[in-house]
Amino acid sequence: MTLLPGSRRLLVTWATLMALTVVSMVSARLDQAGQRQALPLGSAGLVLLASGFKAHRVLMVYLNLRIAGAAWRGAFVGLLGLTLALIAAGFLAARWMG
Image (tube, rainbow, N blue to C red; front, side, top):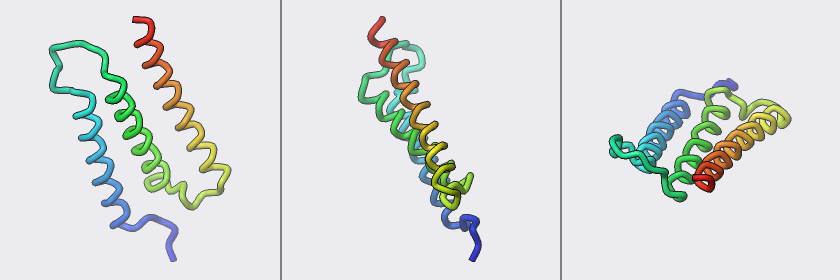
């Protein structure tokens, strides 16, 4: 039994990452490049949620943390959560201040 992810898992993960990229692009309203305005709260939340799930999939599948010890998985997932919380706090602070 190999510990590396199989081709099927890698391709399914890649397709999922691409689909979530499209969801993020649509949610971020990139078609309105000429107009500068803050994202609605729901759109920003969807972008953060999609980004967090994408980062989690990269950690678990491409970096193969699914077979690592619980401490490694917990540390990386915790750092991912902290990063997303800081991004969300920055978005909310910018929205609140201006």
